Amino acid sequence: MNILSRIEDQRINSWNIFVEITIGDYLGFAPDILNNNDMQRKKVKSSKSVYSLLKTDLIRGCVIPPLVLAFTDSGMINDKTTDQQIMEYVAGNPQNLMILDGLQRTYTLIAAKEELEQADNRSETDRFLSQNIRMEIYIGINKFGILYRMLTLNTGQTPMSTRHQIEILYKNMVNKEIDGIRLVTEKEGKVKASVRELKFKDAVDGFHSYIYRDELPIDRQDLLDNVKMLENLSHENTEMDVFKDFICSYVWFMEQLERFVNPDELDFEESGFSRDPFGENIVKVFNTSQALTGFGAAIGRLKDFGKLESLEKFYLLPDRMESGSVEQNDWFIELLLGLDKVNKESKKIGNGQRMLFQYFFRELFNPESDSYLNLYLSAKNSYQKYRSQV
Image 1 (cartoon, rainbow, N blue to C red):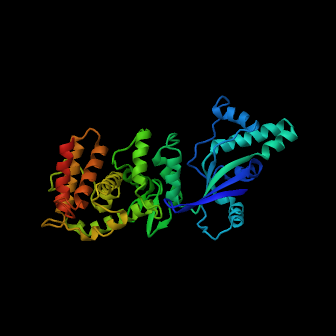
Image 2: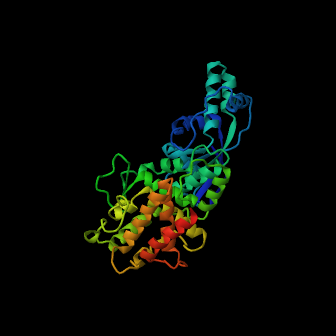
Image 3: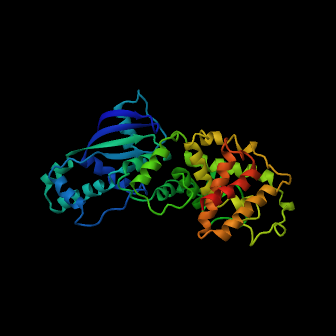
């Protein structure tokens, strides 16, 4: 492996190492890293695909575009790190390598080698393995940086939905404590949920809505959707784990909300609900996909409008909230009555609930709103905003 250059990618706080390596040296470790990145597309099997033609071209000495790999170890290099140290650093820890761009080309290289070996043509095999290919290796890249680079490298292909990529990237956080917060699967969720235990699926839904600035499910994504989403991502601080910040900020909000509800004084029978309320307490109402997606979309839009600087700044807001009503529970009943009306009026109830929550959060955290940090006015005005849009 010969290092041609190294450039610090200041956008994702990572070093990009440009190397030249023989096919033989690359295939010495490539089979061991094929499954290190679940976000990559699976192997293309069709013998009539363009990769079949590429295999023939590679045997004849074709030059392919650089492969892009990521070295996910937390160790960082600096200006004083020698090329030899970098090569030893990467070669000694292949388990931390993943392919960001070039998985199909890697499969094709492996297939070409196998075809030559089966033909028992030693000279042709040696010539093939001695050919040079180019490779970029990101060193010290974090999860958000991987997501950002994966999406920018594959914008035209859209190998899988952004939501699926988020789910795969952060799946190792399931059932682990994150600042005292636990993400659980649907199956593992407790009967008595708490504000510090979120369903992983709901958290992913909320973060996806934050990225897309849309509380509604996105069934189909085209190139324009991806470009818009990438523009949103480009404003994030890639030194931070934005997914973690999103979860922690929402849990902090729910914890502050519990100060404004007295469960012993809630009386749903006298409030005029047409059916059972959406939820009987803060956890049942706000620890849901509808609320999380509404929160994600609202916070994302407030950022776009310049009304909220960052998720880090959001932490300063929830403890400044006020109930805004004479009775402590009035705001909560008002929000539930709005959700009750949505249930009666909306053809797609789930989408209607998401919209109402989105307007609730926008009213609550928009400093130019008359409802700013006022729970009762936010609950009341959110339904009016919802009605004006449907």
